[in-house]
Image 1 (cartoon, rainbow, N blue to C red):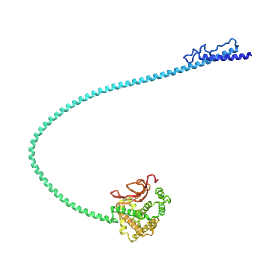
Image 2: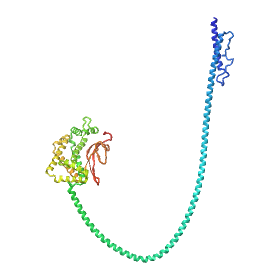
Image 3: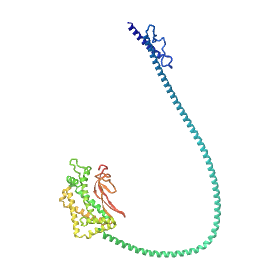
Image 4: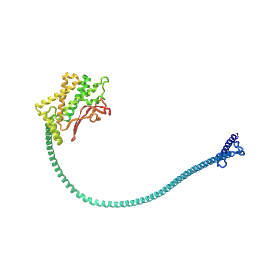
Length: 484
């Protein structure tokens, strides 16, 4: 019982000690400031210690508890001092920053004041210097004006004196010149009369010489034209050839329009894709077709028919000399070799060979030419018969085609008989549309990319001659970028 009561007493004492130590920590009068409120002896939380009947062990516990409370009190005081020092340092830093800002502001204000004062002083000095310089310049100008006025006055006086002297001299010399002028005029008139007579005789002789030269020039012109006519294979010139090419193009276009009602769209579509296997793959992607059958429409097939006819006719125009002539290949090699060395001789050789074919070709050569033209007509009709089956049994279409081929052959001879080079210029598909050299059909998109060429580009051009012509190529175009 005594041990249990002793332990109970010890625990009560320890609780009272802890309360007392805690209360003393927060009520210590040595702490600076008013962080904690002090606890008086009259407070109900104060519990006095009664150690009169305690044992040594209880006293040790009390001492140990007091020691720990003192140690804890010391740590709390140290933390509080540290916190106070940190707060003091922070306040000092803030005060220093504020002082630094005030000092910088005051320095900036002083600098601005100094700059303004300096600018005012400089402006005043500059104004004073400018005023002084202006005064000096005005004084110098006034002095110069005075000097100029004095010089002008002196010059006027000198001029008046010179005028007076000149009047006197003129009076003296006028009388002398009047006497000598009469004799001089008479002598001059006599010289001019002699000169007029000489000029009249010279003019008469020049007029006679000019008349003689005109007669010689007329003879030379006649000889030149007769010589040119002897070289040219036909009587055509640049203007007649241009008109004939335009008429041929219209004739082919009209023929295609006349054949339009008799077209077989399926056979025509198959013929176009077979005749142009590489290009047709691009065309079919852009040319309108029937949704159910996939066939090209009649309008675009008519344009492709016109393209086919012009390609066949260009075979005649692209011959080295003429279709069916036996020396075509040899002539092509010779004229190419000659053109590299002497272009003028090559042109003359082309004219002479063309005239020779027309005028002295011989029966055998003429028969070969006619046979080649007939075979060419058969080839064209065979291709057209695939698209227009009714042409096979229509003799009038053969007559029309023979007339077109014969006209093209005659044009070929007329073009090769000219001094100016006239020929076909290739136009590449997928190229950019050029309004100066091309004419777009209304079915396409003018101003875009060339999808296919219908009629050729023919040009007559000579670098040494400004005359010539351009027969624009008829093309079918699509929008830019869509043909790729």
